[in-house]
Amino acid sequence: MENIKPFDYLIVGSGLFGATVAYRAWQAGKRCLVVDRRQHTGGNVHQEQMSGIAVHTYGPHIFHTSNTQVWQFVTSLVKMNRFINSPLANFHGKLYHLPFNMHTFRQMWGVTTADEARSIIESQRAEIIARLNGREPQNLEEQALCLVGEDIYRTLIKEYTEKQWGRPCSKLPAFIIRRLPVRYTFDNNYFNDIYQGIPEEGYNTLINKLLQGAEVILGVDYLHAKKQLDSLAHKVVYTGSLDEYFGFSLGHLEYRTVRFEHKTLDIPDFQHNAVVNYTSSDVPWTRIIEHKHFTLFGEQVKKVPQTVITHEYSTEWRSGLEPFYPLNNERNSQLFKQYEQLAINETNVIFGGRLAEYTYYDMDKVIEKALQIPL
Ligand code: UDP
Image (cartoon, rainbow, N blue to C red; front, side, top):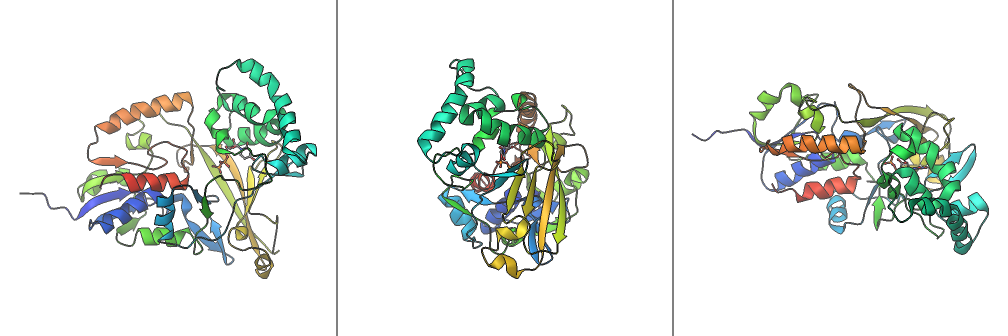
């Protein structure tokens, strides 16, 4: 007799990957059970209200994409606001615009034309270009020097990156810094994508809509009750860490984690911008987030008498902490490949998302993947 199970899919983790799969499965008439070990859904996009302000509990999440299908999917569920990320960098008290653009170059060197800026950067790149002698940059330091030269590397990249990743720039992969645009125009938009914004009603609304057809159980650690939970569904979608899935049998993958210190201040505006990065090593936090600036613009800011700010501290992941950033260096990439070999044998399990794929994904890429997997 065919084994009758109450669910088609058991989805482990209710972040963007799991929730998007749950939505698609529900739309296809499938029954889903979603379990999450946290006491809330949404993974790291979860938000909480503090003093009437929507706080990004696990760091700022700014949705941006150039994928029209992904944008249409998300905006079919929630309306996006007009937020454009334009972070500032504070280096020893002096403010610079990010990403690296004509505003930054003017603040750094007093130049006002792209030709002047290019010529300074070219002269500062000369040494690294000679050193590379035709080969590709092998690490973040070489890549950064190649892109923007010595001054910007020393002021806005080196110490911030070493604080963020806990390793010298010469030991980090080059691709991390290629996330940031370099522009010879006065354009402070941190992203090059066509579409950008934050859900007007917050990410929790997006997640609730994605999970509307699923049964959800919170506070459940799948790996502790694996056998019992597996028996409830025909297929498993696992979005947690791959090394943990296999009991760390081949060793630990490394991650960075972030400690968030949320504070309410009795003033209407603290830093006049959503994100300020602290790029010098003498300041222990990497950045300060002021949450109201994600949703309130211009005069609206002062109408709310309080403000909530978050100091972010980056540290090495260890057991019991949340893994945030995969550390995609050579050692970890090799180890991950070995875990992937083990995963091939788990024919009943779909692995996906930032943790299971050990990839430094932006949100749109997670959704894109979740929209593609065959169900
Ligand atoms: N970065 C930097 N200075 C900055 C901001 C970013 O050097 O002021 C580097 C840093 O290495 C960081 C990488 O650029 O890890 C990618 O930054 P992004 O803002 O994409 O990081 P996320 O928002 O994912 O933390």
